[in-house]
Length: 107
Image (tube, rainbow, N blue to C red; front, side, top):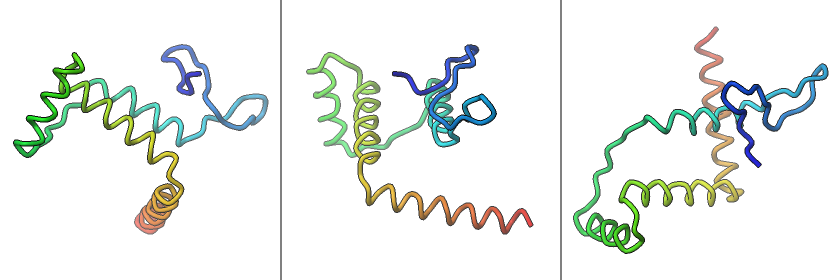
C-alpha cells in the first residue's frame, strides 16, 4: 500500500484523525516529498577506480544501468536503517538537537 498521497488526488497517508479528517504525519510527508523531488535530483558520486569497475561489472551482469544499481543499493540501505533501532535513536537525537537550535535562532 502506498503511504504517500497521490498527486492531485488529495488522499492522505498515515496520521491521526483530527476533526473528522486525517492529519498527515510530517515525517511521512517529508519522505514523500523526497520521493517526488528525487526524480529530478542529480548528484555526483566519486568512486575509487576499483569500486567503479566492480559497480559497472555488476550492473552489466544484472542487465541494468549503474544509475539504477546505485538507486537500488541506496534504497536497500535506507530500508535497512529504518529497521535499526540504534540508528533511529541517533537520528531522533540529532533531529531534536537541530530543532532546539532552530527554536533558539527563531527567538
